Image 1 (cartoon, rainbow, N blue to C red):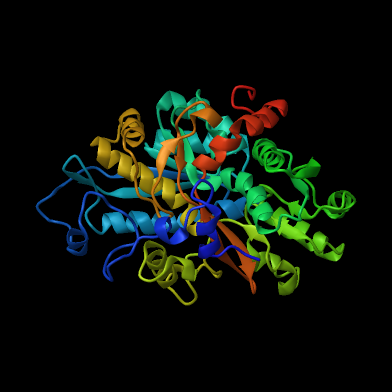
Image 2: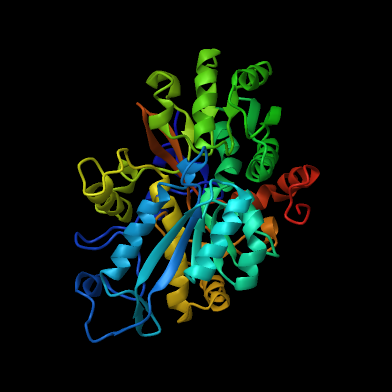
Length: 451
């Protein structure tokens, strides 16, 4: 049985929240896809006032894998960020303290390699004077944070586990990692209490180690018997032995945690070939790619996050549906910048932190990073494309640099991921945090244990 909005309501507000109440906002027919608190819908619909002062162009950076196995988390994000920038610029620029500042984006392919990420960070900052960087995180975040901290540049990782007190300008949370990985064990247990045995695997790198530790702690806190908890090397190409070892433990659920998109395809192919008939669960499953290797009926019910914006869950008109329309008209089949694929959850993923940064600049009345972060922490909530967010994270990461927002959970339905529940994280974590943090600490993955 999958969650419905009715069962979400019955589960209790302490754990689950009704998606219709927090996941979308109705839009007027002519309203854009992003939130701009400086203007009303009527003002947005009108052209930028030609009498307004136009300031210098503000550069932002996109420092992520645009090639290689990690590119599925990077390359698509360029589309959403560019849609946001063009929408801002169509109104004359971002209104900050009475001046409109046009935005421009500069990109660098770090291939998920730390040394290349540092090279890219220096190019973006020293050559282009960027004020904000969209990124994936992980090893590149480790490599770049001393330089970016010294230069006071806000770096927006997809992965909240990158947040640490000595990285005061690193923010994360628009991507719901690792909170989605922490909530998935509870979601599966709520769906089917008969499930008992949890197996989890991911690559042996910074993000795999840390995010898997938070997932394992959460699975244990929610009553699972974790029967497999291992990492494969980053250069693994043959996943048959990895899957054989997992299935030898007879799991009810196989979780792929934060496995890279290309790895997810290979692991799912092996799970199918080796006859796994249980539940597949992961941080991210690009179903279009996986379905090239497995039958659609085998992937039915596979659970992950990063919802699609054509999902009926969001309704019409809505922020999400308008973003979809804008994306398809520009990047879809036959469009002027056709990217030869369907829209994914990553196309909108990076833009959440970009729009939050833009809100912070408007709230602070300046692009000064310290004032921007102070303003974001000081406001009770701010809107995002997934619902209201706020800055938090001190108990997990030692600093309130995490954007906390509603967390969608999806299942594959007839070959397409569809939202089944939208959850609030805070009360769930509060009731389990001591047990979860103890496991993370035992694994040496708390922020104060990692170099």
